[in-house]
Length: 628
Image (tube, rainbow, N blue to C red; front, side):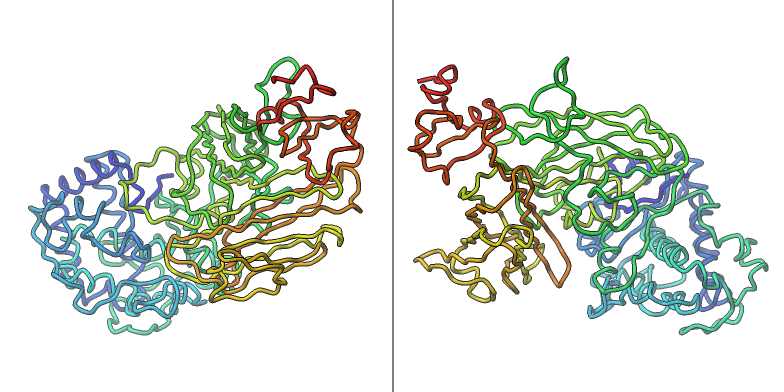
């Protein structure tokens, strides 16, 4: 099954082959014949009636099959006018391909069409209501075929034609290559509406807003212009193509409070990486979506005494660590070879994809069996931040399980053209993406710990809230949050003010509570640092985990989250303890132990971990690790 892609995610090779095929069908006269057919029937059977959607689906497929005569496998991409990187055709990759509004410097300068120098007051469609253009979320919310197909006259379809102007605004519009991508997106939206409304009539002659041509009210099994019937066009997958997942649209839809909208087509292979222990591969994932048990770290390479499946270990800074990923297949067929790519990011919230992530490379998996799983690794990673990790993994077999092309390994997008995306949309709405964003900390009763988190903004200035959930910590735990004074200049907090300084304010709360910041403004692509200080409980139980969760919310939706797992240590014999002042490492049987302020000690499972973090063995209790 072939995939129709978003134009901005075509590779350079795919764009070259598409341009070659389009130029070939234009030179042969085939495209001109299609344009003449469209123009001749503009007001007599293909617009302003029920046949509008199925006829244009047939029309696109008719050209697509001819393109493949010249370039086998080439597909018509779609133009998603709602994306921030797709609302100006005088920027890359649009300009060098389509020639912009002036039709110069592109691949089709020699074609015979014109475009308007400006938008002429027309507006491209938008995702949500409230913008200048027609809302696609509102259109997809229609529950009847007549309600959805009013996209033709409501601004979605007409808005794109008139925004380009010139030839695109009339009956000869197929002579402009943008026509085909424009209608590709209209077809994609119809496919999404169909999938999410299986109980509705998929085609009927019920009148819709804008209807004006009786000849376009073609009965289900009657021939349209060109010979195909509407019935033959209702299932696009039987025509040989699919569409991928649109995480921006699904996220915008969820933000309106509606039930989930599914945008991608089902496939025989369905890869997923769990986002949490309860994840079954269904989307969207419920919180927490940043605690994948299928991504874990081992500090040593696999060997006779090292089993990668022994579970997660705290990473050791400034030396190679080893990351493993498990990929599941809930589909009915064994996969073709799978590529898994791992990424890391500095800890914090509000990370943007791909802006804040660095690749750790890609590793192959020969196959993943139906209803089975496979492990891949190790990926080699040398962390530089003690005790923190933010890891992401993507599994991909594009031919069988398209997922979202925003996540594709190897997709070449020219610099500056792909709009950055809230990474949590990928994790929650694309099941072949997993994230582990956990800071495991071993904590003595009464220990004092400190860690910093970066709270990042979005692509535009907006207000955010930060929730600090310490409800599972014992009540005698004390938490302090330190931040720059300017952060709260136009926001509020329900935490108590512990102290104010010239540049910073320190807020306080206790275990067993949930508090935080509300409506804090963050500039476009800006950030601020939240430093947490924790005085850990004396009442905690040995080896029990106590998570403290920090969530960042925008318009009530979680856009970033971070979990710190505190593991209480009361039986001291099997652990090592570092004094951050002297930089000495001790065991609890050390003769100096009674003189040490244990509240300030850092706890380690291994000497190697402590040494890697700059500690030196005590000459009394760990002389073999004393380097001085």
